[in-house]
Image 1 (cartoon, rainbow, N blue to C red):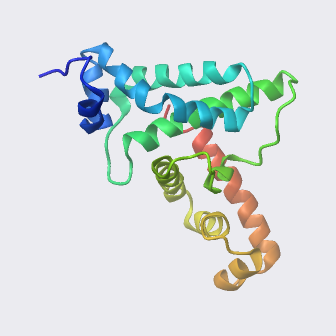
Image 2 (image 1 turned 135 degrees about the horizontal axis):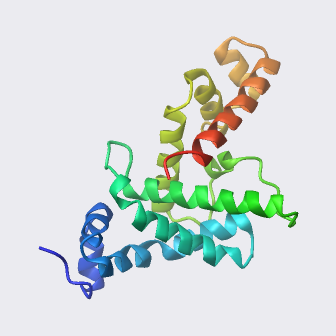
Length: 195
């Protein structure tokens, strides 16, 4: 049985995101529940990446459009929730816009790579923080082990390059090279991932 679009906020919070997404394919008005849940957080994240630009609203709108249009591609898996999937779409959309701004010669803030997402952001709620970490961990699991280990140790565990070199039995120069390559691979996987 399909849910009523005007379900009370209390009741709508109990319905899992994945279920709302699936049901919204038959009853599009239900998708508004997901927009209500994520719009503010997506806006903050897009603003954090792109700065105070007009494009932020467009990016958030485009993200929700992609989520809806690609709903059939979402498959719930262990360690991969709707939230992590949706944030991946948001991040990919933000970085596509960021790259377009750079190509068009519009001044942008400097971004090393999407790995900066692993750094705690006080504007995120604990739930957003957990989901973002989950998304990063999923991407790291798709990378070659030696690269994901280096990136995890430096950015998630906060180890210095000297500590990583000692743990891996390699030189600090080799760690720098490995971290650089790992960042490139991380960016490639998140920029050209599914959706």
